[in-house]
Length: 299
Image (cartoon, rainbow, N blue to C red; front, side, top):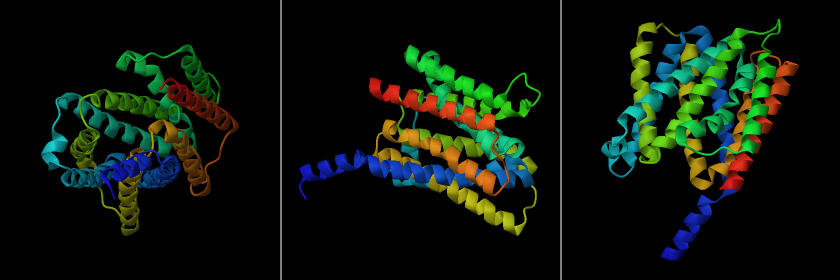
């Protein structure tokens, strides 16, 4: 095959939207299973310990990927922004702990319904953090999404549960993490950010979680192994997804994680879907899809 043919084949693979969508759907399913496993384990053991073990496997995966790339670990770790990269890693580790705590308190359905607003928070914060312009249409979508969050939280109502704010805090943390990732991406490669995310998070969680170590029964070690495998598999699928298709084409399908997580919450953990949660989640998803569409139109 000629060099021109090889380039054409590579370009075709980089724009393989059907494959990208398939990989994104698989990614959301794997991450939903991961959330179900996290919910179970965190209800039996300390959250910090669960996240610590999960990060050990994640760091091993990141290091293995870095070793396979050109330049090895030294090239992956090289950055001119070590402070920001460290903050990113710490922020993501803290966000995971907060979100898993939300799973144990609120369940998968309600936690994911609120957390789904994070793309809207990214859009809202992209101006002050990245200096990007946000037009009135996207601000309107952000406002609609915020109404959806209020419908779920029901502030001022007798049924209001202050714990429902926990996944909202997690969403805000994840949004800032995403924006910082875009910011450091102006100078650092994706492989570098990925390396710092895994290694920094692993060090931080080990320092925090080792004090809460407790014996785990054999069955739960199996669940923990599955949790680690789904974490690595999900990240690999996500990386592969963005390699074969543009993010703007596949990102809307990331909302399927809400569907899959809700199915797991209802069928396995006996959760239910309250009317206000369903309505609020529908508004948030609609607003998020519109935001993605406007971003794609502008590009």
